[in-house]
Image 1 (tube, rainbow, N blue to C red):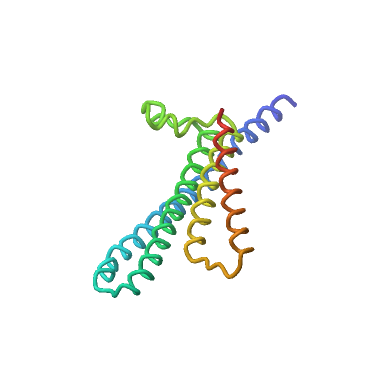
Image 2 (cartoon, rainbow, N blue to C red; image 1 turned 90 degrees about the vertical axis):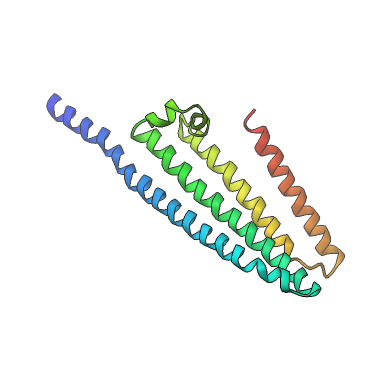
Amino acid sequence: MKLVEKYFEKLLWNSRLMVLAAVISSLLLSLVLFIVTTIDVGSLLIHAGDYLDATTEARRALKIEMIAHIVGSIDGFLLATILLIFALGLYELFVSDIDEAKNNEKSAKVLDINSLDDLKSKLAKVILMILVVTFFEASLSMTFASTLDLVYFAFGILMVSLALYFGSKSKH
């Protein structure tokens, strides 16, 4: 019976390596998102010359559109970063410490993940930043038809501010 228990426990322990599927998938998704967002940024830079040739009215519209694309690019890079942190965190928690990170003082702070709660906390902070950026992007194209719309917008800014405040307090 002890022999069966020994092999069963070995099988259980090695089953943690199934996490490698999530690690590899997250790394690939992160890479794809970094590439796609970089291509979007390149396209934006190519079309930035249109701003110089535009009329004053067209410049105003182009500026808002360009800022929205820039903010969208920030979202893309933040999401790619979430996937990267998720992959590295899962690997460190379930498979092995990343020796290269331990030898590098700068990266050790980013990857200081000791539990699933640490990983969730780091991911939550980056997701909060994505929400803030998305709120800002949506605010660029908002039109206020009534005073109530302005009140809702102010309330949204208050909620974002509170989320950032409590998010910064959670690390203390």
